[in-house]
Image (cartoon, rainbow, N blue to C red; front, top):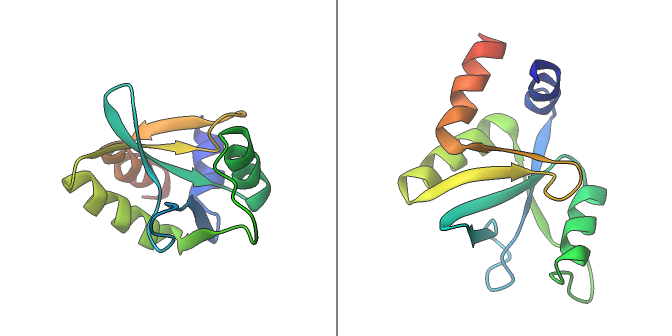
Length: 111
């Protein structure tokens, strides 16, 4: 797992699915009684997720990108507003983590 997290944390940016109601805000979805954000490592993974979940509208693909450190800060703030966790590359193959674990993993791997 360390190799996977290392690769993720060394990306120049993370790609967030956005809300249809507000394309300037990351998509937050309630699943299993918890709120989740969806982050992708590339737009191909994002587009597959949107298509498979009937979230892909007409026109250009819309998403937000954030440098990894900025994304980690945004996620920490979202955690204080009740967002539980992050799904990375949801649906194939992907992984997830509760928001507080992101900084703990970063500290463990990046020092």
